[in-house]
Length: 203
Image (cartoon, rainbow, N blue to C red; front, side, top):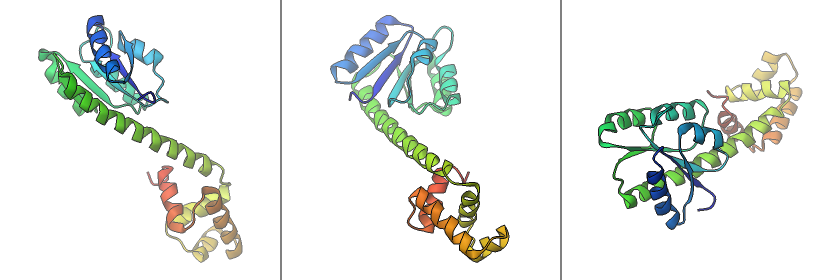
């Protein structure tokens, strides 16, 4: 599990240490943070991970932390830990994007099972983000004209239509289309469209 980290965020040191001991004993990599601000200052979200945060903390609450992580585009799933009186707040957190919440005292094995699911999700998100970044880099290598032709292909235009609309020869369209597909590693028009959608062109 060394390729992923569980980030425990709680102002209660004993609670952090207790959870940390449990998770470490099961072979999970753990980082503990005494506050939301501490997490945000130290977080490296290029490494897959899960954030396990207490709902009620001084300064930035768990709900406010969740909002900030989403604003930053953090890919890590967030699981909330809540005291009995904080359950409504935890429910609001789930509606705002948290993966789950656990009430204190936490059932350790149920939490570990959920954390393993969250870790799988974190790795999938990281892999998808890397793939998207690779496609974006390839798309960025297209010339302005290649991009125009690629967008026209994406819109379902045939080469003759593209040539007419752009005021260029059919042969030139074919060259730009070939170059765009070559740069993107697309073997067909359908694959070209799939890659462009993955790059956000369909949004």
